[in-house]
Image 1 (spheres, one colour):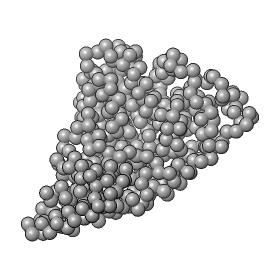
Image 2: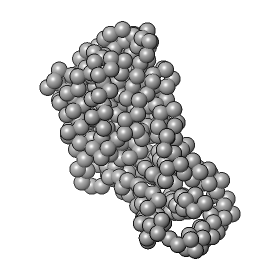
Image 3: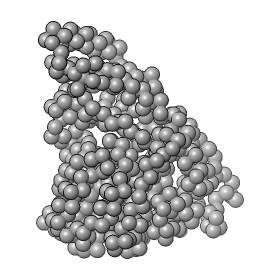
Image 4: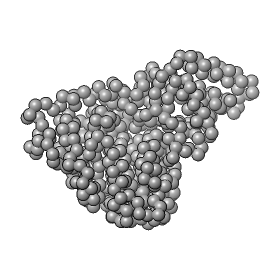
Length: 420
């Protein structure tokens, strides 16, 4: 299809009439399709049913070291679960802590600790101003944590290999810039994996703030969509140690999109100094996390290879869903010059960029016709996309048939706004 700008007035009017008719037909169907969050579909949840019966009977409640997981104790997790996440994180076991069901909770707690007690320096809450680098577009819940604690966010765009490192290296010269959130593999929503060069530049940073911290949210570390997951992420801890920067990075992940969201296992990895600081706080906060849940998980998944095999089953379910959306985008919008989108190799989202100033109008049209998208602007701090152009598509929960219809409606809305 030729670019829309090359259409004659008559051709534009004809396309507008056709597009409006299609939109009206969608509206008449009274659709109810929710693509607002990256939730696994029921068929994905069914893959983990064996977790529900993995532990039963008195002899089943003990971890490999003989500890009764029904009781208090083992603050940082059972040994087999620590070992499994250490394998996934490519980190030493004594640098790993197992949490509850939410890595977001672990991140929130860590930032809270920095605000109230500091990260080796003065508590952030006692400083006149604290700033964070916000990689955009990004994860809305990261931005919500920073906003909750009154941390000012500075936008840095994500490029093909990760955040704009020239901007990052300039910003960290300011001592009030205390950190940044990163989703280094299959970023939310652009699906970008950080290049070796980006990881190395992050690892060798010399921030003015000695208590600068990178929240390394490795949420999609095993979430490739294809058999050959060649987006190998450089080990940031190994790189950081070369420059004496191991305290800068704190890594987080969970099994929320591996097994059951809200009923999985979370974990973090950090330097010796950070682990000491975090466990000291944990002794005041909790006696122990849910060790039975950790035990269930490690009875089903004994090694990282078991998890990777399981994730290949997820990928078989997700590939047709992503394909349904991407094929529709190409069919409906390809060549028109009014939208662009990524073709992710993993993760949970597709990032659609429409013409400046039109994303909210597109979102409103979709909502009126029964398609719920992530709130437009949510991929930027404070919910403000200055270009009003980015729309996050979450294709994982609906069925492929629903997705095809949803994607068609989305494309119709994009065209209708451009033609209005």
